[in-house]
Length: 243
Image (cartoon, rainbow, N blue to C red; front, side):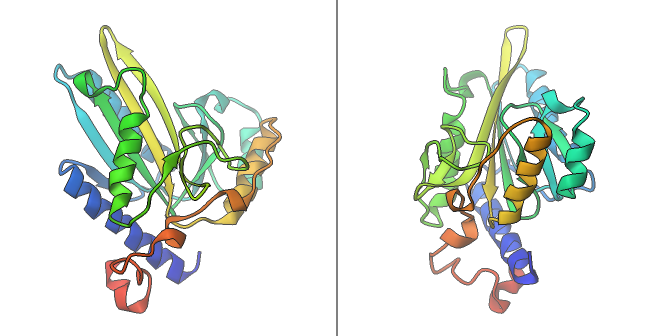
């Protein structure tokens, strides 16, 4: 990304954070730490904390990571990971949820929702997350839908898509301790879509034995969609104070 794109991504992330705090005042906003694996593992720490409590909880976290690729933990012991990381030119880290490879970086906003007790939607762990995404993006007049997007990386029927293109991918899993359960649902929102991400993702997936075939035309970034007057000039010199 050039300097203008970085400024725009910073401003969009801050705008999302401000909107989220209006919806969920106790939400946690995290910028990228030095260790990309630690940023991913913080989600698990949140879920484990909720497992240890006796009351219903609803925790929300908006965060960014340093530049890396993230794959399911089942690949952690693959001999191909080192090769895949070298080919992609960035570290590969691991997450607990399933799916395929995704990219993190300053151009991606991650939204994590941890729910227990009465907050857990029966049989549909993605619904509260998608509802939150709807509310979060409403201020930017962005109307999305949950659907699969052919040609998108890490595709699934719970993508958050706008105009038939993938804006955010989602993942969810359940942790249990005795009779108590926690649902952790996560979305990666593209602040600014970088086509080179797809090349890196496909390099990693080929090293892991997959045959990916993704298209940049199946993806979109928030920077391309923002059209409301209050956000139209994000990233310009006049608004650079937001970064």
